[in-house]
Image 1 (spheres, rainbow, N blue to C red):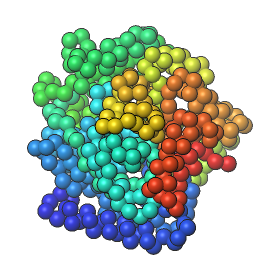
Image 2: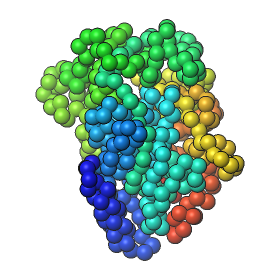
Image 3: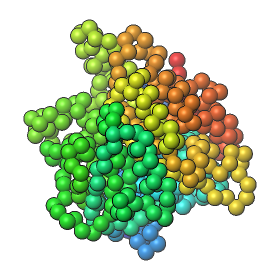
Image 4: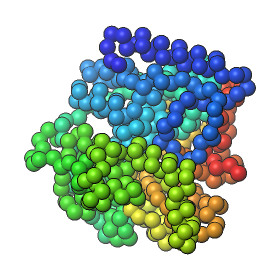
Length: 468
């Protein structure tokens, strides 16, 4: 989309969005006319017209001198990275799945291995245009009410049509070190040593540019330390073929990937979840086209299972207990990670678990805050404090109580007790008072009154919490 006509093309797409808003009957809820999603919570089916965002999927302009990009809200990170890597640049944080959109990551709290030094995707946004529930396009910047409340609002305040983001210069390759730890306390010490010293950020004297890890089993923890480099040193590995990236963490101490392949190392097999579809079986993998080894394909297969109840039917036929879907990302303070993993092993028993350290850069205002301190109101993380995101995605046998979501509810209680938070891209079960306490729901409601006075957009609580 980039070029002389990019801005006029963008304005035309925004006008189509406005026109589609006007076509929605008064009093009807406003939603996106978008069939694809990276959310794991139920979406109400409807034939009602929605917002036309079909023309808001591209990169408007990359400024390699300033190190910035103007990007449309529905642009996927796959397309964004393709445009910025041509200039040796990438977004400060690139979420791990190709079809996550920039607007989605900002309103829905994306994360990746650079988050221990660059924070979360919204913290490198310089300004954005938001299409509000009132049908207006508002340009907003850090420190302004709408901008600060937007992260973790999941469309309850509006949708980003354009975002201006800062970019980071990167070389061509990434050198990886996979470090094993037998004790979770030692793992935490290493994370704290690397992430807790902004002027240092190294391990054994070698710089660390990106940091994540995997807990494979009790007593088997790995940190993957990534260093940007122009020298490959050896032929870069390719995990889009027969080999599977997450298995290499246990098998190799060192590795080299191209920058492009590093950014999408988790997408090819949806972390490890492609195994549920047989895509990691050596024979089936040879038959499975490379172009179809990607997260959105697996998401489509999962959608078919939901639609036709395939796994539940097979489990009933086998006489095995019904399974509860446990698909969550949570954050706990780094010092509470060993306690969480120990509890998780005993009570949930699901492995592997992805580990991703993060440090919020916070909000720097010229004046006093808005009653919630110098943090993002809708997802309050203490700036400068080290948290660890734990991601776990699968199912566990629970039997006839499955519909009450006992494991998910237990996770929510434990994370709350540990002073952590849970991402809201998946199902949530909080009561209203707890939800408002954790995500400053009352503050969000006040902002919503300003930018969605007729309540056309679904509230965050109604979007995120499983309702009965």
